[in-house]
Image 1 (tube, rainbow, N blue to C red):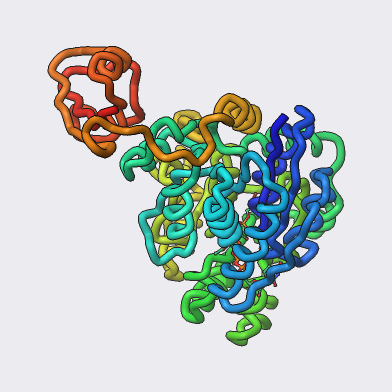
Image 2 (image 1 turned 90 degrees about the vertical axis):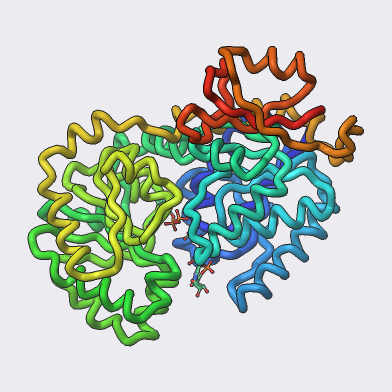
Length: 439
Ligand code: UD1
Ligand code: UDP
């Protein structure tokens, strides 16, 4: 038998790791849950373990936000010591937060295999700490679980060994499926309390991204945009970071006085599911990553208050709009989205990219069948001196296995006829280009 360590630190990590933890429990796999303590308010952490009926973290490192680098250093330090003691076969973490980066570095530095769930997402915006975290973690993870085909391509394009990449879908779909079942009978308490105060259709709004809340001009522009929304109610689920910044920038009383808006502290996962699934919920206005995915799955139009997203599939199919922080653009975009007569057709045509809600099973199947490959051993001797890469044009239709077996190589990247990188197919067509590493 092997053992696992799950590292979580923030709200979305708890929600997205929950189905994997439950699946490990079903399989009787021994595991330890370590919480870094990055999120520490009950509403951002404990309440999720309670309502999702998850085993409480075995260890909470209590590393709360101090200066950013200090927090990262403390997490790595504490995690490193613990992981050496526990000596698991694999450490798993999900997403792109500081806790994930710390878990990855603490594992790899101790030569303990690290598995990254939700790997390969890219916004190509290096001003986001999350993008830096994703890139560092993906480049050194022992095994990478991707949520979409697009993320597979992103990783291949960065030269990541295809043998380490496994497309499993996003575990948020497992959470939506499993926990969605639990709200069929009753409306959870927090959702019920909010719904009692609302008669009309509503927008769910969450904001917490650094670029929006640490910037006084942007935060004020968002508050003033919300003031202009008249024909529909707003449920604003207030992230603690945003609350602190509203106070600091003296915007809190203006924010609290917005008509048509109910402000709530962060609700538990069953409650937000219940709010999103309510037929009066017509729009999600957010800068959250997870909410963009959930909106797509639940067929709720989404407006993302960011210039870019690492979930571009939803934007390409026009069920999610990127909107810059400008009052007129935000208001126009909300009005257009709410009156979009084509929205049903857009959702009907939308090809949901994030899997079938069975990602947790797939992740643990992959873990079980790859345990032996995860150990830290130097690469084989290569006849060419090192694992080198060649780019070759495909002149005739040929199978992947024939190329790999006959030429003793591994195909690491495929470009289609248009020069676009694609997931490595079993059949290679004339006009493709392949990148190979010679064994
Ligand atoms: C973090 C993640 C972000 C993720 C988000 C999910 C990083 C770099 N950022 O952002 O990717 O989308 O979590 O919500 O890891 N605070 C509290 N109570 C809490 C948690 C935070 O008061 O329970 C306040 C503290 O003042 C803290 C600030 O919020 O300094 C920011 O918290 P932090 O965890 O650093 O970043 P988030 O914005 O939550
Ligand atoms: N969420 C929640 N309660 C709330 C607000 C959000 O349970 O009051 C959930 C939401 O449904 C999603 C996740 O938290 O699953 C998103 O977390 P967040 O926006 O903090 O982080 P991100 O996804 O941007 O990293």
